[in-house]
Length: 223
Image (tube, rainbow, N blue to C red; front, side, top):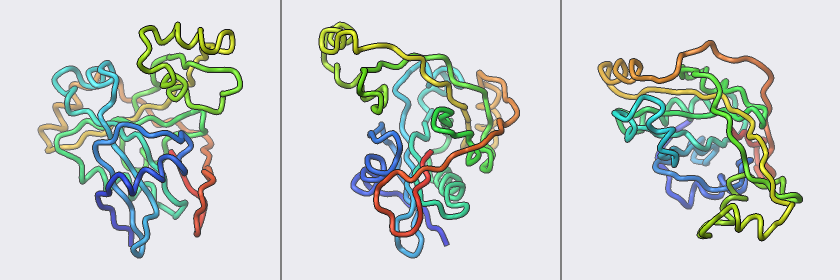
């Protein structure tokens, strides 16, 4: 039987850095672990989205301070483990909350775990560009951008440091899913305030990844 409970930073950091494909930390307000026979077999984290446009853009300014993003999900490929971890962790979040998550098309993700747990599908994320450096394409765009943190003009710093090796690349769009947590009145109000039309679930092939960290049982599923 899978038990889901709150975990501390020292529990989830190794999973985020060593097992999740992004290989970087993210803002974490709530972290939960899935335990099977006393062994940690999965981690899920939620945090406040950094972008104020995302917070206010989902359900308006009235609900902006209630928005959380499911920003990391990483677990062993045990049948139904991912959906159990999502479903059980949602019940442990503050109420009311507007929860958003993105399935990364570039990583071969469709978002079936969100479909299995009854999230609303609201289409693709907005078009964005990522910062890139030739020879460092394996790094996440945000990791590249972090290198210029603290500079007066971050773009100028990147150009001075990397010259013509610094360039912009269109960011692959992601499937956006939304879930409402709260009593019936809260859920009805949030649904009414939702800025995006609800669309049919997307379909397609999905991929699972062994994220290279040692795992005694099976591979690691990251979303």
